[in-house]
Amino acid sequence: MMNPLETGHQPSARKKSQPLKPKAKPGKPQAPSGLQRRQIRRSQQAVLASGKTSSPKALKPLVKRGGQPLWRLWKKWIADGVAFTLLLGGSTLIGGCAWFSYQLIVNPDVGIWLNQFLPAWTQIPLQRRDSIQTLAEISQTLKKEGLIAGKSFALPQLNSPNSVAKNQAALLPLPSAFVASKTWVQESPDLLIPVLKTRKSSVTHPCEGVCQEIVQLRLYQAVQMPYQRPGTTSYYRLTQQLDTQGPAESFVIASLIGTESNQQGSNKPLPLTRLTPFKGKIPQMGLWFNLNSERVMGDKIVPYGQIIHYNPNHHHLSMMLEWKSAAGQQPIWQEVTGGKDPELLIEQTIGLEPQFSIYQVQPFKFIPNPIQLTAISLDEVFLDDYNYRQALRLARSGLWSPALDLIKPLKKNIVSGNQSSLKWSSAVQGQLDLIEFHAKITKAQAIAAWASPSQQVLASLIDGRWSEALEVLKNNPGNQQEIANLLRSNGGRIKNRLNAALLEKPDQLDLKTWGTLMIAAEEGRNEAITWLDEQPETNQKDRKEILELLFKLIE
Image 1: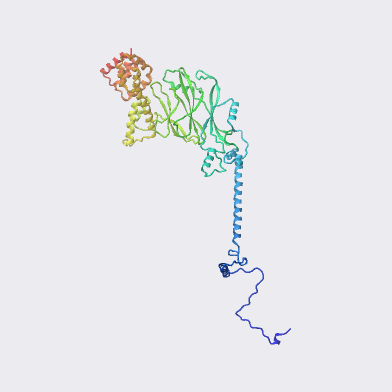
Image 2: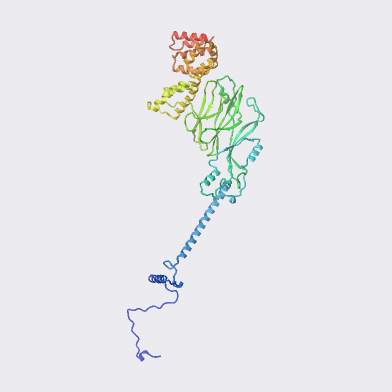
């Protein structure tokens, strides 16, 4: 080997400012810099602009900063989204299954409820319980107990699952496969079924053929069974059973007190034989039924019964009121006070004596049935006023027109503010409406044309028209004996009116005259003359005139 020193060749000197360049390592090529990428794009654009196609090898795929392609990022995002969706759906499904399993344990009929919202191919096959029955099965069950199913009444379904499904389907723009519609689900109304049993015929409650009475009212709620379709048999569940017992016999007989009937009843409950719904204008809330029958009393028929109310919001039946009618009339709903709901009228009129019990629908703190029937009473005093108390006393005695003449001006003064210390309440208004309702009847009877003078006298006395009745008596001397008999048979109702009127006007001559004649008709002339002498401010002229009429009328 040659020594460079020997040959005289010297190595070239390296500049200090130029460092040694490292040798490129074989392997993965280095990513182009930003300047190089811009130069590549310019060359590609220039080639494309000149009409030449670029070589595939010259094009580089788009990459994100860091060197990862965008399509790989999208693929990762989609995979993450699918995994999250599957996880959420699986958790929801597991939770729903757990809830449904718990409900099946607590309430086995929840599957029946769910079937109403599912199409036919997804409905759940469930075993029907004994509490779910068809109408035929209900009748058969009652027959085994010795009872009979009466005529059923369809009831509205305000909050039933069928109506909820129908409302949900109506809100959808297109028919839904997951909400049962009228086409796929049998819609059956709830039912009220009276339950009857046979009884023996009696003189007071005769009947033709087999005698029956209503002992229960059963409320059945319609239930949707699996695979039930329109036209198929409907199923029902018993939700309430209301035992019915008629009013006591003494309660019904009491309606004829003061008449010629002297019968006395026992505390034995009377049978109820008919259930009829009220129609026409009735209160807005719920349905109303009249559970009634009749008792024969000689030649009279006295109806009696109970008022039944159904609240569809809570599927609840309630007995609201027991009633009887000496007038032989069924209860009716009629607007009396001008409120939003009509009032229940029960007539007790006998002859020309009008008597109506009027009941208003009032709120009541009981969730299943938040209403009650309250009678308009004249026994309660709501105002501290003399004329008001006088009006109530006259009305209780049957002098409706004089009572109305006192209470109407009082209302005008209170409403106008002339009596600011008093407040006109709805309770006082109800009393005024009750008085005015009766006053219209007595006034119409008093001004009517009667064929018999005695009936004209009676109608005038009932309305408190003492002077007009006295004129009829004086102008019909040939009918005075008939009028005397009328006073004997109607002494009670006329005497009550006379006593009330005499307390207000003890010195009125017409009142003294009728008082003397009434006592003479019932107790004799001597008792009548004694009573007349005890009356204040009776001069000899008035006494002589009264006695002359007394001797002509009463023998």
